[in-house]
Image: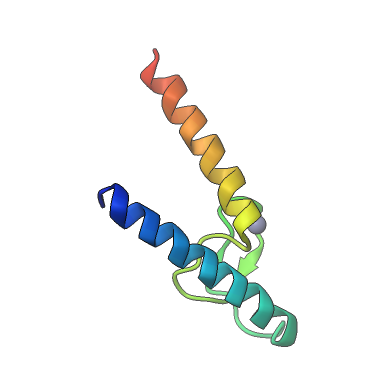
Length: 74
Ligand SMILES: [Zn+2]
């Protein structure tokens, strides 16, 4: 996987895409979904988008990190 700098860039990119995706979804709700939000399973219409918004991204990543820390501690 990518290093930390690339991760930060990817997160910024994801957040931007999520915002754009949400804005577009309002006007193009009939658009075909290409994926689901990893956090709430909401349909996403933007390719490469993994979350419906930045709140979902933060929430999901928090839980992923929590699980990773839990597993590492075993
Ligand atoms: Zn979501």
